[in-house]
Length: 185
Image 1 (cartoon, helix red, strand yellow):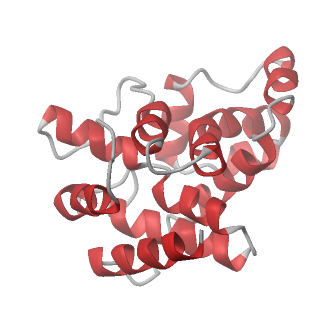
Image 2 (spheres, helix red, strand yellow):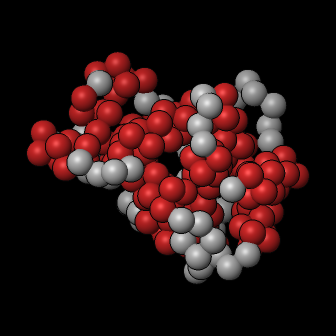
């Protein structure tokens, strides 16, 4: 699926965004929390959009399978399906951090012991399915990518966007933030 209009993205979140993320928050709340963390960190509009939309591939998986849960026992490469679906509407400044945010988790897990220890149970479990911490060679290859710094920043916001004590976000919060960011591009 390719998103041809911003309304297509909102529709997917409207239909599937209330499904639970791997933690105790909804897909929509996770998306909005990540984008807010990016804004607080002074990220560019493109990177805030990437933070907001980085897990849209999970919603596409849910839609394709007609199930309310993300598959937890195999890696369906949500980062690629999401980046590909968004590519009609957005350039690489948005799609490439999305495409590489899982690899950023693998990189950080290999290079930062405290980071690896701080992963939520869901992220730790998915890390295994996604290939585990990178090898030294993989780390070098990852760092050679132009978008690796942005992917690392996105990954850190992804990890922070799981705050169960934060006020849950609504589809209206999501849509309003998306439209504001689109106007700022």
